[in-house]
Image 1 (cartoon, each protein chain N blue to C red):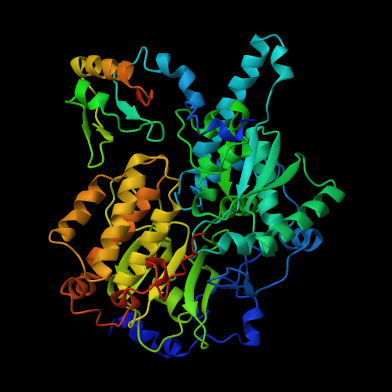
Image 2: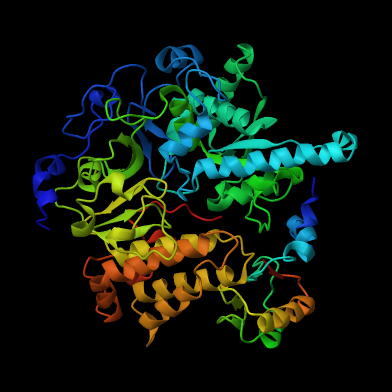
Length: 507
Length: 90
């Protein structure tokens, strides 16, 4: 563990995170070394300050207060018209910048808007052909701000909605104007009380000020991993259960709520849209509009697991993003990049990758090597030197299998098969051929579900097999875990084995 | 608004009403499966074995390539035979 990046940061790495008063100080897009040039003009940050969450409960431990409408407008300026005006045409800006969906899939935003614009225009044509009769049962074109953050190690969406709800809501209204939508919806987990209160207050402020051109409402779904999956959101808003649904016509193209186009965007995508509307296309001189929003899993000196939401510059490395929030004296062994459907990389592979390089769409058929990995929704979870990769992976794989909506056969059987395979390995009762079995099951799971949950389990477990080959061999040899993980003693369900990654207990 | 039990009856995808005509007038055809509707009955793999194989659990894994005319004919018979209406051409 003497990687250059680890050595360079060893002093900071040796300093366990303490919640000193200075964490409230706004951290303007600085790497920990703080050599960021000051930017001119309106504030270009998404968050500006760091927010700390308890990892297990995902409630705020320490963070700034909710920004009111007046303060928000004073900071970033008024929202220009989405269809022209000072900010230029928003669709063109978003296209030129190459903004992609921040829920993790990184789908190009401009392409999604264009398909909805086309669908909305076709809807008008259809109405006219029906001679106005269509007016009686129209259904609304909706834009959804999706804040149902399913990833247990992610808290960036909560941080945005709690700290700067108006930035997200500005983006929601702007997208509604661009595509010609009738209304906006903010979609949240039902137990996300802190977030819901912040959004409800913000919506009340905006209504009182008659700030928005479309009505915005608030809706919630059950506290499950899949509740934020885009098609689950659409089906829930359509009166069905909040589980994924298969569509031949994508929701954005007219297969949405009430058979109308429904555009679902992650809340960070909307916050970025609201920034870009004000800044226009960023130039070399102006710097980017908003940094890379990350959720970094770490520990306090007390041992409590925390998620730090940090806005970091694209040139920041994984080592710089993780180490001074990590709370250990020795460099980590590995990093899980992108969340529970993401990819394990060894510390040596991950340390010097820059966030800007990782912040991209996953290419079709991409593998799990450092050159192909994506930051997904911005999760960085470092595995301490003394933690067992097999136990962590078995826990999370079991959580993913438990999270299945049990609708698609390959997921119902295959995602569970992966979880059971890792449980067997962790408990030292693997069967002959289980290592080959992992590759065989994985090959049958890629793109086999209505949603990407089986793919998540494949990415997690295949990358774990590569990065934790030593741990796997140790467990397979039946000699027990050299790191002393709980899996060997087989006490409790597999979800309880992880000591680093937060795994919500299924009911 | 769908009733709560609408899903238990596994209503077909609402895009499905266009499905019959969706593939008309295209030069190239691919076969797709709606994995939620599919229950792994396996008629398709019998009727179009060159295009569809089943996985470990009996669910169809269709070829992800453009089909030739003979294959398209086989797939059409598989589509007609699927009790779950889970198969379609794009």
